[in-house]
Structures are given as structure tokens and as C-alpha cells.
Length: 411
Image 1 (cartoon, one colour):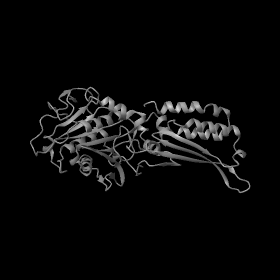
Image 2 (image 1 turned 180 degrees about the horizontal axis):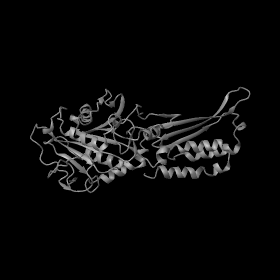
Image 3 (image 1 turned 45 degrees about the vertical axis):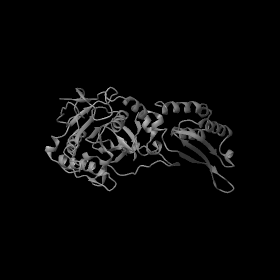
Image 4 (image 1 turned 120 degrees about the horizontal axis):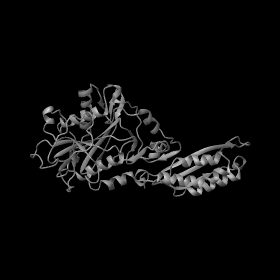
């Protein structure tokens, strides 16, 4: 049987999710959905073990799931009720709150493949998501926040269900035979959440291509991802699937006490169980506003810390000194917009670059100010510099306008 929790009109405490209604399909591997008249009715006896629930999002949209995560963080009281949110996304790339998307992601390739790029609210590095990747968010009050305990839940689940021996590193990553299978990040306030990815059967070739952009000449104060070799858990056990891992981690969470010990099967019977969640504005008032913010260009690109880009191009050689002659193309980017652009050319440039090309380049530089940055600007500059044609000159403004439409379309 299938069930979904529906949110009541109250939104500030544990009286949330009063009613249930059927919708959506229960993922394979989730063998039981338990019913309760109120997910957050009266709290348990003082001093008793907090109750637990596993929420499974029915959405595969990254912006919806990030908004759901943020909504729960802001509106739920986790003091007497702990929650594990399990969610999967269609292919996308997720960067940390303080990162530079152009430094972490091949943005041009992502756009070409209609791949969403999302900035999350927590710190940490960049991760690739697809349906072969499982995301886990552990919600607690701040004073109960414990990454190690959460990651131990994941490792025990893999060992118990699949015989896979994964380990938690000092950096609080999960590794398998020395390869990273899970990265981790968190957000702390009155409440806290710790979320992590679990690579079950993800497209690692696509991951590798997307997370290897050209960053030559880029100088940024943004947080940089720590590169590490990765592998899928399925490499260790071919019977593993995202659905089965979802089920095993969910059950392991329910049987684990708050101090991290195994409470056994009897502990599961004391919990709230699994619940399918429909992340819509009807169920979570205000969710659409959070989603719109998560989806906006101003959040995903405009929140990028200030950075500069300096490109150098060899145009010839001084015949007297035999020194190389280089043109320098410099950009300063703030909040995702180009605030200054400059072209530095040495004396003797006209021996190698004609006046028409120099005029085109000058016009291009002048047109860049206050435009949204994106890597296509560099290739446009290179096209003007090395393809001495009037056709290139005519297309400059058209190209910039198209780039602006493409990369600010969600703002």
C-alpha cells in the first residue's frame, strides 16, 4: 500500500502532517509503509528516546528537493522526533554555498546537455547527482548533530544488507577500498542537518566530464572542491540498487539509538516508519517561494564569490629581441556579472593583428561591462582574435545577447 503525509495548516511545530493520502509509487525495496494518525502528535515521555521517521521524496527535481530540505530545516521541531530524508534526482550538478560554479563545473557542457546546476545552502564541495545516486539528509536539533553517527548508519546498512565493508575517514567521507562513495556537508542553526551523497550506480563518466572545467587563468576566493577518486557501491556487489540501498539505510536509521548503538529489530517497531512525501506548495506552504529562489540565476550564479579571469595569447615574436608578444584578456567578475574587462597588447601588436581585428576586440571589450559571465565569452574573444573576419565582428553583440538570455533565463 502507498501513503503520503499531508501537511496541516499549522507550520511551526510537531503538529505537522496530520493527514495521509495515497499517491505515487513506493520504491522497490521499501517493503512497508506504516500509518499513523499524526506524524507529530504529542511528544514522547520526558527523557525517552526520540521517535524517528524516514521521509522519501517523490520528486526527482533538484530544486524541489533542496527547497523541501530547507523547508523542513526552517519549520520542523526535531527535539522529540528525528527525521531522515531520502531523495534522488534527475541528472544535475550541485555546488556548495560558497563555491564558484565556473570553477567547479563545465558550465558550457552542462548547458549543452540541459543539465541543471544548483547551489545548496550548506558548504562543502561539488557533487554530481543522477538516479543512480542516493541522497540522505539527517535532521536533528543542533545539540544532537553528529556526522560520524550518521555515516556509521550508512556503513552498517551496507554491511548488514549487502556484505559491503565501507569505512568512515577522518575527513568524514565514506570510502570503499580507498575510493570515495559518499561526500558530506551540513548546515547548523537552531536545527541542524547533515546530508551526504551515496554513489550506488551513478554515471561516473558523466561525473568526470562535468566536474573537470577549464580553470586556467581563473583566480577565485571561493571554496574549492577536494578531488578524490570515486567508485560505485555496485562495483562491490552487483545485486545492489539505489532502491535497495534506500530501504537498507532507512531501516538501519530506524533501529539505531540516538547514541549510535544498534537497538535491534524491536527498535524499529517503536518508530514512525517510512513515509512517502509529496513536496508541493499545497503540503508545504511557502515551498514554491523557496524553490523559486533555489532555481534563480541570482542564487546559483549571482552568489558566486568575486573572481578574476586572465587569459594570455601568443600573437607573434619580436624580431629584434626574439621575445614573445602576448595579448592579455582580463575580466573581473562580481556577483556573476562582469564589472571590468580589459585588453593589454604590447607594442608591435599591429605587426601581427590588423586594425579591423583590434577594433573588433575593443568593441567586444566595451560591450562586456555588466554582462553576466559565462565561459562562451572567452571563446568569442578567441574567435575574434584568431579569425580575422568581419562576420565575427557583426556577431559580437548578438552572441553576447544570446549568452545573457541563456544564463539569466531563470533569474
